[in-house]
Amino acid sequence: MVTKKQRRLWAFLASSACVMWGISGLFAKALFNIDPHITPMWLTQIRMIISGLILIAGAGMFKQHPLQIIKNKQDFLEILIYGVFGLIPFQLFYFIVVQKANASIATILQFVGPFFVMAYLALRHKQVIRPLDIIASISAFAGVVLLATHGNFTHLSLTVDVLFWGFLSAIGVATNTLLPIRVLKIRQISSLVVTGWGLLFAGICLIIIHPQMPTIPNNPLIWLYIASVIIIGTVIPFQLITNSLRFIHASTVSLLDAFEPLAATIGSVICFGLVMLPIDWIGSALIILAAMALNITTKPKRPFAKKYHHR
Image (cartoon, rainbow, N blue to C red; front, side):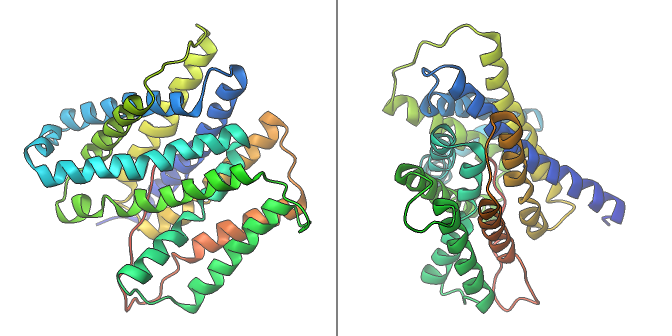
């Protein structure tokens, strides 16, 4: 029996995890500003490999048998696909937007991702689209337009490549949500195992695609920021979110996700002097509220897709 005190505690810890994800984008932006040799590709490779190994080791410590997936070809293939087509666009394209713009814009644009999930479920599984879903979609589109134009519809304030990579990262949110459903829900494989191997497979794939390693200055600050991206941006929040699902509903976790762009935006204003016009705050709010609206449910007559993600 979950008590009210436990629900409050884990709601707080889940919101803390979302704040950590937002903060990790700030560390990434600081890294890109320190040295031009630090690229989104290199940072994603390092983050995925190290985080994957840590999570797999953690799964082994908790006796979750991480090596079992090697014995099942279908599970192995699905986790590989999840890593390559889910985690890579979700993380690599996010870092590209962070580098080209900032953590705030990157995080807010990713909030368009749930609408790709909604579109897929509607087309592939004939899931009914509610009037609320349509209103939320219009709200999210309006929010993106306001962010992209500052309210001046004659020119773009965000470059075309930022919008391009931002929408690809939002598609990554959708694939990251949909691809591991079978192995997590039907096969009941530990999320530590699925995510750990997915990250490791994705990191190895990126190294194969881009094996050239840049020369990184031996600056202690660089390695501190990288460690922060890995620990604060992956390992700790992932554990908090995963464990929180035992005490609070997945829909609640999704609503708490709003703390992520809020933390990234406030951090970008304080740390990097980001100037947010009132119209930008309005656009950001429209996107965030629209994504939250997708998780508003009455007594459902249709299946509700539980959603959580890690950065």
